[in-house]
Length: 167
Image (cartoon, rainbow, N blue to C red):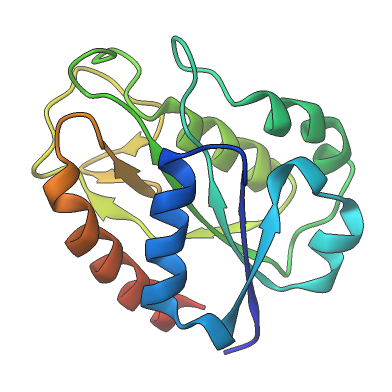
């Protein structure tokens, strides 16, 4: 398993806390944290495996820092890269677009040739629709700190164990 980068906004509280849980479960020596607001093509060229934080903003949008990087991302060939995406959302307050940012980012990455890993079951979540859902799975790991914070630690640990096999 080669070194993995985890990319999240250092300026967010909830995403940062989840990212810290991912880092702890993954092993600090095996992963390098990168601030999403400082992301560049050079960073993506440096690693083969990535864990991305994509909290859903407003009614199903990507955060500004991802929106700003998408044009650069779309110019890249990511065929030999693997990406796992976790995202925060509120399945009760935004039931029609729960964790859509995971799906939005996955679609962009796949168009660039990337492989998406880290699917999780939709079991245990209650929502109407999500762009992150494909069949009976999510294309990443949804986290609902508003309504299911007690499940976060176990979900992260299970997901990271799976990622270690897929990376």
